[in-house]
Amino acid sequence: MKYLFILGRNIELSKAEVFSYFEKLGNRILKYELEKNGLFLDLENPIKENEIDFLGGVISIGKVIASGTEEELLKNIDKEELYFGTENKLNYTIWNFSKSLEVIRDYLKERFKKEKLKATLKHLTREIKLQEGKRANVPSSKLINEEYFIFGNKELYFGKIFQTCNYEIIEERDMNKPVRRASLAISPRLAKIMINLSKVKEDEILLDPFCGIGTILSEALLQKIKVMGIDKDEKAIIGARQNLEWSKFDKKDYQLINSNSTKTQIDYVYAIATEPDLGEILKKIPTKNKAKETLQKFEDLIVNVLNNFREKISGRVVFTSPNIRIGKKRIHPEIEKILKRTDYKLIYELPEFRENQIVGRMIYVLER
Image (tube, rainbow, N blue to C red; front, side, top):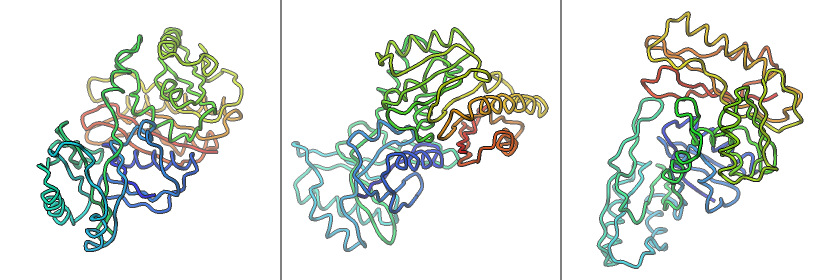
């Protein structure tokens, strides 16, 4: 089954998430291609109708309905129904990941004209700035009935978007929870990404040793993953409990512990996904020595935690670290030192930061 995943602003992070997600599901990727923020996947099995709800770094998912060379593609599209609406007025857009946009644009214009539809092409006029500095276009209008896409150059793939992330619902859920820590809490989007990078499955146990008010725990529980949260801050644990109770999660599926993760003893869990203390919130760029001091404290903390839990974790460890701006560069922990001190190996090292952010994140995925 062939699909297009339109990735968010951090392409490499989103790609790693999608790959890890389908690996854990056992849905083999037979082929993939990446063009800008469009990730084409040929999967062994069909995806679920609500698959996008489980992915944090994906804007939309499209299904391929026709493929081939330009000539073959147009013949194949002719065999497919493109619009299932009841009104004869149609606003549509085309996601472009190909040099054949003009061919598809002209084809759709003529096709809809023959079908006597009042069809209007809406261009992708809103821009998002990608992690690496480039820009990608996304729809700006909500008055769009159909979204199509064209992908590839030699072998072309045409299809329709059939799943789109509902950011309003995610934001509403996050904003309405009883306890919030805006300056400290990780976003639901990044929490989902980290959970998927850990490859933890439904009914397995995910540990967050710095759980704060429970954002990662909540997102995991929504995926029917059992969780254990630890935090030495008693107020954070009280807040996490309030948030999980507010979400009406089954109390049998989560455990909250007010303790220090460098010393706490636990039963076996599958994986870790966590955001440790990234250091103080900075309003101005620190000196190199100050930044290095923060990173050294972080390295010592994460090493102590990983070594404390090393015999209790069977799967991956996913954690964020400070990625600190000094001048025009950024510095982050020396991961080789962490690996040497914990006997883990590196799977992914992925930056996640905004252009003017002083303390961004580096996301690490480790395995034994």
